[in-house]
Amino acid sequence: MRRHTPHRETDVIVVGGGGSGLAAAVEASSHGVAVTLLEKRPQLGGTTGIAVGSFTAACTSLQHAASVEDRTAWHRQDIARFAPQRESKNNTSLRAWLAGNAADTLEWLLAMGVEFTGPHPEPPNRLPRMHNVVPNAKIYIFRLQRQAILQGVEILAGHAATRLILDETGRVAGVASRDSSGETTAIYARRGVVLAAGDYSSGLAVKNEFLSSETAAIEGINPHSAGDGHRLARDAGAALVNMDVIYGPEIRFVPPPGDPFRQLLPASASGAGSASRELDDLGPEALHAHARQLLFTWQHPEDTLYESGALLVNRDGERFVDETRNPAMAIPKQPGRMAYLIFDQRVARLFGGWPNFISTAPEIGYAYIHDFRRLRPDLYHEAPAVADLAARIGVDSKALDVTLAHYNQAVTQGVADRFGRVGSGAPVDKPPYYALGPAKSWIVTTEGGVRINQAMQALDDEGKVVPGLYAAGSNGMGGLILWSHGLHIAWALTSGRHAGRSAARELPTGRSYSSNIRMAFSID
Image 1 (cartoon, rainbow, N blue to C red):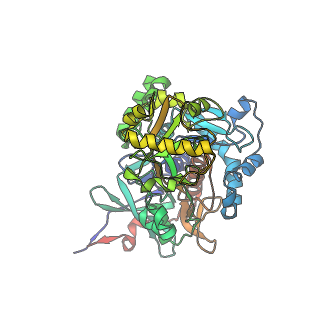
Image 2 (image 1 turned 180 degrees about the vertical axis):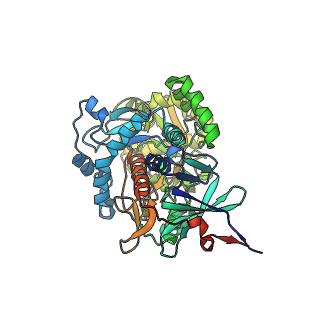
Image 3 (image 1 turned 90 degrees about the horizontal axis):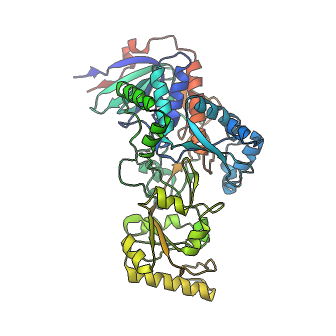
């Protein structure tokens, strides 16, 4: 016996409840149309909600307040300097579009109550452009979700988009959604569908198709980023570009125990509305304190640490790689797929202030050795002797002592060690000794995505518009290469806004899809 799938209509459907999806939903609903947002996870947030939160843009009000006179053309040129080896694959017109529109999105966020510090410098940017969100990236999700609720966006968490619905003309007419109980609903969109479902950093099937098996086996920071939007788009006829380009693998410190995907607001509109009012009543200081409790970002130790003499050891206390030559590919082969950074007083003092920062960090901009001691005591280990440090991080003290002795001997003699590394010029022998970690290798994000135009419309292999379909964020990368701090967030929120705006302005089809039972899915 066959029964028809339940079906209903809205104006715009957004697939994905991260930064780009929420930006699309808020912007679309601000144009007076009905919006339904689908998120497969029980909580909104996506990768944006677990990010450090930098937002890089030129010609912003914060730059102006700091007497920084910038130009979008300079920003466009400077972006190219971060990954010159990838320039041949970059979409230069979309890069120019991002450089010209990111500042407007930053002002939009400021008007919504999002706060930033900065601008902070980040060479090779010629001017300070990195704006760090206060207190961390979860505030993006809080403010956008709150605004979406205020504007009447229908938020359906725990609803996975399983396929796009095409009408008889080939237009994307809606989405088939399956909820946590297994029930499928056909939701029809009178205007358009926006794909904002994240990247494919944890989508093993997608990675195996486009990446080497060694790289594909490396975990994504967001285990839920399975490439769902990419699959949906390709099935509907959209082209995918740069699918072999990823940001990573990159070494990042593990988050402290807890749920990194927990957000400031519950996903349901009723619960979120109540929680939002309670947080607003507490004021901004209490809101920031609450957000700091949810600081679970994966922070990246800068490569300058290794260049200055820091070493990597595995759980056995042994080195396993030349740390100055792509060590991220070696860590997944170690016991527990993890490592510790080891250094002495000389390096610790060096990384006590600008320009030698250990990592970027929300709110404070850059984190130095004292910031890790204060803010991430779970990662920070200090001891007066090598044996004491080994005990603190749980590695064999004799093995660690031998490891340092072999390295120090090579450095002192000015010869390459057994991994081919020529030392920094100074041995690791000045107490106290330090360890940071554990750290692991992750694919941070993927650069491949749907081919799009500047209206965020999905395009096919011939460059023709796939009618009714839009893509934003990591779904709609369009050939962009965004290899620096703050550009992925800037792209996610800026492209999301414009995708939502374009979908809302799409002329309605003038038909009632839900009355066309022939198009509804049937289930045996």
